[in-house]
Image (tube, rainbow, N blue to C red; front, side, top):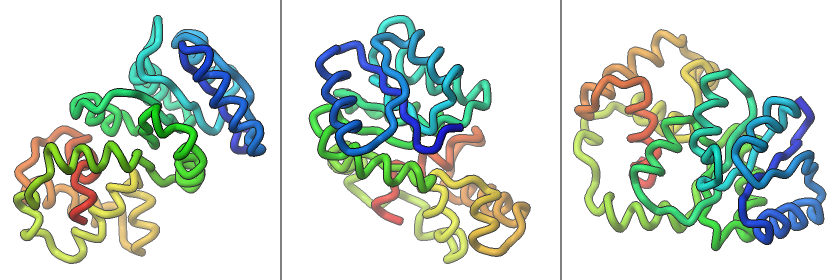
Length: 211
């Protein structure tokens, strides 16, 4: 994998050119550009970039569909989505697919450098505007069950909200993976979540302002 190489895809030529020119001017290694989802995915498979910055709504394959294909085929490229969408279900799906960044298009130029800086350190970054929007619309009150969690569980939950795997969390906290998995299982029960593999990750991301 080329260090910090980037593929960009957007079906709006002006947006594609503007973002590409901006990143190149800042010294980033843009190795490929695409105006539809099929070309974008093929570039990811062929070039194996560190990061792919994708418009959510593109012909042939959406940014979400590309993220899903990357996850299914164990591709290591980290996905950043740029979008006008503020719908909660789209955001939830992005988080469930392990997307590292989610930026609103109107703030793309302002936030993309910060987002990339987070992603190369294996940390997620979501546009402040989308976080505050979700807070206003869905997170008015402190989520139920949070008060039931132990200090150890809260510490692990904060790391889950950063998209860290159980193995990475175990290494950081100097505990076994089995211990982390047990805490995860306990948190799912205490928070009343369903037992889907992604439920706790989605919950942690949506409620990270309370962690």
